Image (cartoon, rainbow, N blue to C red; front, side, top):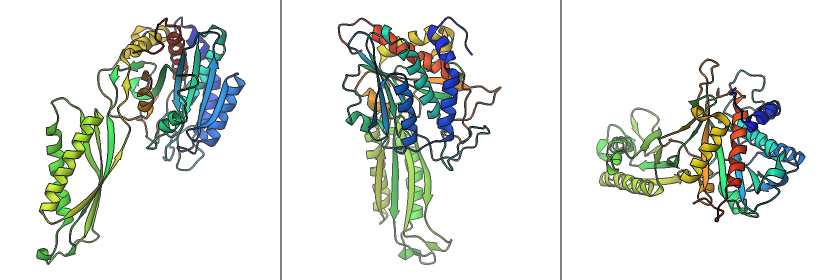
Length: 405
């Protein structure tokens, strides 16, 4: 654990036992998106015991706590996601999931515990807080269309108006105990596609009577992989790939259709629209010209996360108060991830940052969404301290305009 003079980190370490216990409770009893009923009940119970005003059922199964300070009219939000994944837990710990096929393999159990730790810290100094703090516990981050939009539609950013929002994610790419942020565009926007290519099936011995959708699919795959990225400026990040292809049953019968599924990830919604337009033109050119047909379904993922530059700088200074400058880093690459926290950032300035969990000596190296993902729970004290410090620092900024621009 980090040693320094941070008051908030000292307070967080004192709360670590509770954070560890409640995190393990959530890990044993994970719930999928929009099914987080027991999770929400426990969160609400803890917040009420801290003297925090609580509203439940926000955007489905979301929970919101409001901590009112002693003065000021600014409000800052801290956000944590609370859902689990449809994965069989394979961690070798006594807190392994007790729900078959469901596990907190994305670390959201840790996010909840960290946010509760921050609430414990801040509620203990409420008389010194110059404003309000909202604790947003959001459902269904890992299941598109996500829980952020329903919470926003239910008014989570109003009454009182939220002026800024901070979120974190545990991340095994970065060294344990480090805090990492990227100003500006943080993530790629994503889209899943479901393509069905139709032909005329029949016996393989009668090629003059068939249109082979397997051949057409192969042409689409090979052309799309090589042609689509050429429509971008050099250096523009793109991930385009097929993840599923199904068609046919035996070797001497040509099927009537083939189904392909895949994913596109790119840095902006505008470029995504451009890529999907080119993709469909390519499909149409190949399939229709060869007497086939197709249907293309597009399922939009989350938009890019965009961190407010000014707020990111403020967050970095807050994190350095907790960890020192040698453990707080700025990242210079766009992550190929998605998170519906992006929708919150479309309404208010926000910072989404990463808390490093990689520890090769202790075996904490498995990636997110791995059935063996786990982390050293000591890092939760760091997360709680930084979130608390950032919230207080934002409320303490003297500005003529309540919003960071």
